[in-house]
Length: 215
Image 1 (cartoon, rainbow, N blue to C red):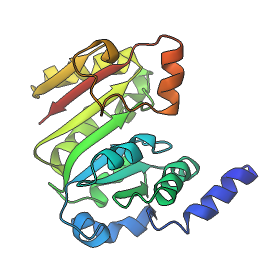
Image 2: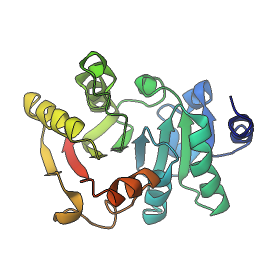
Image 3: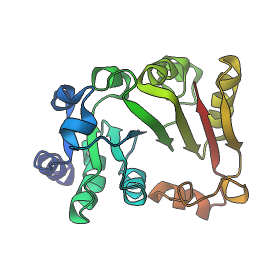
């Protein structure tokens, strides 16, 4: 591990807005009341990476609580540090494996889920690791409140098509779908938030896919 990664891992241990592994378990079912000290809705960004989307959403919606979830602490460091430096109080980061979400959130505790540019896991043998595979969708179904939505924003056409197929197979309500977000009717202030990687994709004229569905 490089010196910079070691430094970041040590630093996030001191961040008040980062919980690592089992440190987040006591808040299961009580994130709004006990961690954020309010009764506002809880929104997750899964595979949040550097947390750019999490922080930007929190700034746009101060009346909601946002939690970025990722296992790579050196990436979380960037978003967590930005939130602390900019005084954004409605942001937290949880460093866990996403497959363990159910250990950290209670049924019906989450109002909305964002999945932004996740690893598409294109190999068929890795289908179960896709964050929109039935294995993960079953988890989201339990954690979301009735009517709560999942948003998928991705540059990967294969993951977009795969997710759309699962929505049809499972007969899930589909609220929005486009294979070219920035030339669609859906490109509002929220969906126009751009991460570092998305900006790179757009420079190469890569189309951005978007799906929104519920259970």
